Structures are given as structure tokens and as C-alpha cells.
Amino acid sequence: MIIITLGEVLSCSGLGAFAVASATALHDASDSVRGELGGLTSFVARAALPHIRSVHAVSLLAAFAIPAAAHLLTGNVTDMCGGHPEFTDAFRAACGASPECSFRYVFDQGSRCAPHERL
Image 1 (cartoon, rainbow, N blue to C red):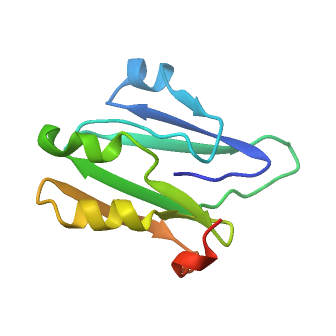
Image 2: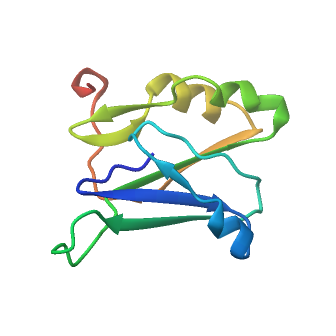
């Protein structure tokens, strides 16, 4: 999940000009990106206003599953906690119990919240 303010995030999977030309805009913090394990997915963040001179990431969460566990990724696997994305407790438990599923906090400057603090 990616959250951005005053700008946009684009994603593309694969290499080369064709992949970049077919980049998809992520419009909401709940948008997801699908790709292949071992494949490259790139993200480009850009400011929407010319006076903004820097862009920085706050959070990037990733979840992976092979086909036998793909059903774990079909529902909503994230929620918000203190303005930061977080994997749901149910997803973390189900994915953590499956050897075919894995999740990572790729980049996160937020804090972990207790279940009662989730929005």
C-alpha cells in the first residue's frame, strides 16, 4: 500500500520502454499492485505541484503467495493505524501460518498499533 499527498504514484511491472509506457496510476492508498515473484515492479512518485521539490515514501507493504495460498490475498489485507497502513491481524495470522505466504514491511516509518487502535 502506498499513501501519497500532493502527488501521484505510478507502478509498472517488467523491464524496458513498453513496461514503463504502460505504467498504472495508483489513485488510492488501498490500491494494490500485482506482479510475479522474482519479477521487477517499479514505483515512481511525483509531485503534482511545481513548487514541491522533494518526495519521500512513508510506507510500503508487500505480500507474496504462491497459487496454493493466493486466496489469502483476495480480500482486504490492510487497514489504517494512526494514518499508516498496516496488515490486518487476521491476514498476519493466516499468512504467518502458511508456508506458501509471506509478508514484509519493505519500508515503514509508522508505528505498530494495538488492535483497538486500528481505524
